[in-house]
Length: 270
Image (cartoon, rainbow, N blue to C red; front, side, top):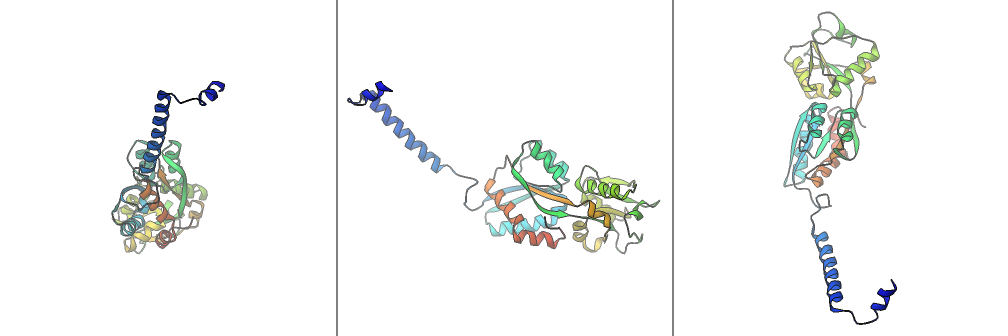
């Protein structure tokens, strides 16, 4: 330190002066590069494609919100992949490219967060409750969860690895009922289709899916469903390629406008 102080009192050697000038130029250049670097998560307008992996039960509402997002942000495109939340989570942790994940349960979201594939903390944006779906007119006169256990009933459930199947199992366990379905389906839409095609007398699905099916099925509420309400979390993914658009889509889902679409479909507020 003492030698350096003494040296600066005299004339600056040419080599040292050149080094100092080079250092100053480098600092200016570095600062210029930093300010010029594009910020995909900045405050500019969303653009480009955003890929959303979402639970099958969100198909109708998210499709509506995707169309609204594209209208509000010209130049954007929302691409969806709908399916069982467990399968989607496995795809994400396996490296499938996606920007946003909306799951039908915290458990399936944890598969993604535990693997370090989520950016930040997932936020619950809606909740969903179960109903019994029957063919129109309810020909089997099903009025309760217990009615599904009667001999000869052809009942379909979601696979227990899927949130709707786990919720159905939770409701059955809470009521002490034993039920052996004729099949376990990969997601809630597949279970509902069995009833629509009259291949099953009933299916335990989300009430939002019953409503979305309109007159193709009839819904039967049952009190045990209150013991198995599912929270739906949404998260930005760590390897998102379009962070700005992904954040904007999540903001739409959580906004008053998005919540209106979701509640209109039968989802519960978080």
